[in-house]
Image 1 (cartoon, helix red, strand yellow):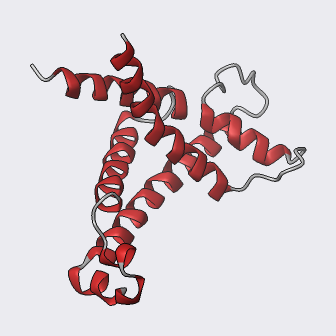
Image 2 (cartoon, rainbow, N blue to C red):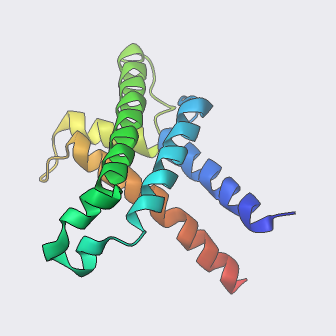
Length: 148
């Protein structure tokens, strides 16, 4: 039995639920986590241009730049679908009680739409906040498990 894999899967499910809520389809959440995993895999690898910036062309030759851009496009596409689904759900529930809007994405979209804050929030900011929350959550839970 792979306990580490089960814990990561559980953490991802909880993080996905807290981030996207009950209304985001499980298939889209899985696609998001898969795209996120691929982006992390390629971005955490070795890039020649990180060590030698003048040799940026090596990343093009080795295909690293292409793989990173492809992973970024996949992640961005999934984000756009999830945000569009959440916005449609919010428009449909305009007159109804918004009791179910307690997931992170709905809260961030509401802050963006109200525009009352001193620092305006954009869709790009929302995507960045979600990426950081999804990337950091497994490390926090792993650190907590190490303390137990």
